Length: 594
Image (cartoon, rainbow, N blue to C red; front, side):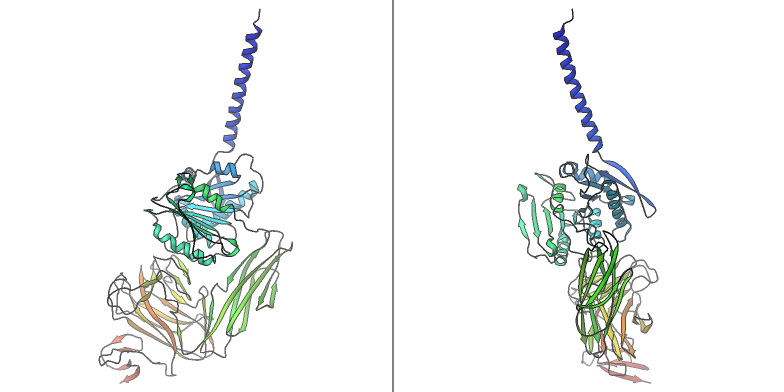
């Protein structure tokens, strides 16, 4: 006979084992569905790689976090580093780990910015992510890329979360909108020093108009090694946060109950971008633009207004321009460009209104200050803080273009504070040609990318400066340029008689007094163009830059020591000790010896 009781027991046991097996298979399927996946995408003709983590059964309209690896690492390393999968599963968002070319990032150009934008489009196409809740983070060089993106695509990224990285050469704090930032950094970071992180925090606090005194939380969430500094709220309710990891090297916090990935998500999820309104960016005039009417009280200024606009819903309908609340014009298609003439001294308020075909609008305002100046225009009016690019100046060293005012630089073109016991000036403007190529290495006051626009009235003038070489001896060329035609009103080249010796603490004297006379026949917008030696690391150090109106003879009053041994200078500004044939300036007077 059959033992039905035994069979029943065996059946129950088999059923239990089957249920366990099926649950195991289901778990495997679920795990496989939510595993990291390797993907590729074509960007500007190149195949780019990335990893993605998509929670199983992800719904439409969910956020996206893009997390960028450090130099020489990779997306798999970054994924393991961040350990964010559980956070993704719980909070329901997608994370993408891009791979840099040769495991490096383009932190000065647009190739990896385009990669990020392509990934956003791809995730929207495949998973219908919420474009208004896209967040960008990165470790080390990935953090540098995150900072770079702040100035490029703030209209696409709702919040930024750099870790142990910032632009080593400094940056401009010029995002298209106020932006939320959480920066995480160890205090004993041996790769990207912690002590410079604060300057970047300060720059973005200022740009976002946040309170400069932070809310400080020590032993954050019970972790005795973490202090949280929160600056905010600023414009649009944004915040800037510094997570200080005491005693941490080049690493994140994944201990003592505080996980960097979790903190990034908690911060970022509070911010979003209204993606129904059109995208609108005012590219000209620049922020903080200063228009100067020099010796031109009867003249007026012209301002070029250039904008970029695109629709997030429907199509673009129009971009409307107002100046001081007066309608100037309406454009129904790109290019969105206007020229405003006949502006007088005072403040001009530029207002742009973009509208799409569904009635969504976005407005941007910018003030332009127009100032009358007589007798002397100081081109070093913003030579105040070392490590900055002063207002009014633009510089190109062959690899990087910088516009003032910007700050946070400790490499490349910038202001340097001279500290030698003996020195001719206290603050110097360092420029260089890093590549040695023709056309590289210029510094310009008043060009299109700078924050200064200078119109000079009819008359005779002199551009003046003190000039040295910083490290490498070589000539420096100076030009006063008609901005409208690009033609030189005057130009000269000098070989400095002083080399500082590559250290701001060195003593130095004998700086060359450069004098460049020029004449303006009618009110003219001018640019001062200065070019160091066309050689690898050809350089210059400048101070006391100005333009002065002269007495009509082409020579103005020169302030020199009245002592008997006061030096004399040729009209090119070169110090000379002889009185051979020629024209000289000595003790503020012009002499001709035949």
